[in-house]
Length: 126
Image (tube, rainbow, N blue to C red; front, side, top):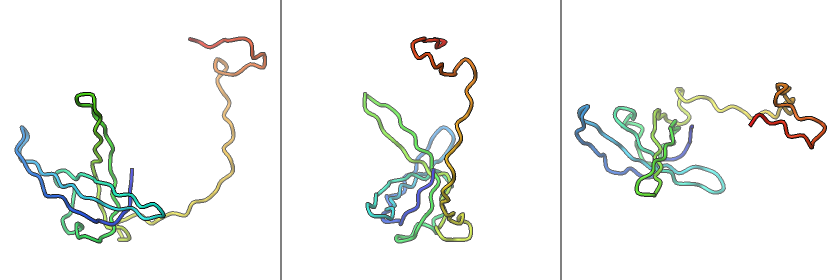
């Protein structure tokens, strides 16, 4: 997934020691544009971030994965960045215009999933 927004806050850099060596994690908050702007906190682990991009006010394009996990009956969601770019730079992909296309043609179903005109007969395989 991708999100574009303006960097508004940097949380303190976190570091530690794990079984695979030293790790570092940088959390940052961006604010999206639009009529109803949203604030989103994203984590960047290891060397996934370029400190030069992290200036308050920079527009960033962040590619990330969303993952949720359960702990003691509560759910927690992490957004983990895997690529961070300055929005509008040459390395960022150019925005593409939305083109309305013709509605998709219905696909032909396999015979075992086709709906019969009888309607009363239930011939589902389960």
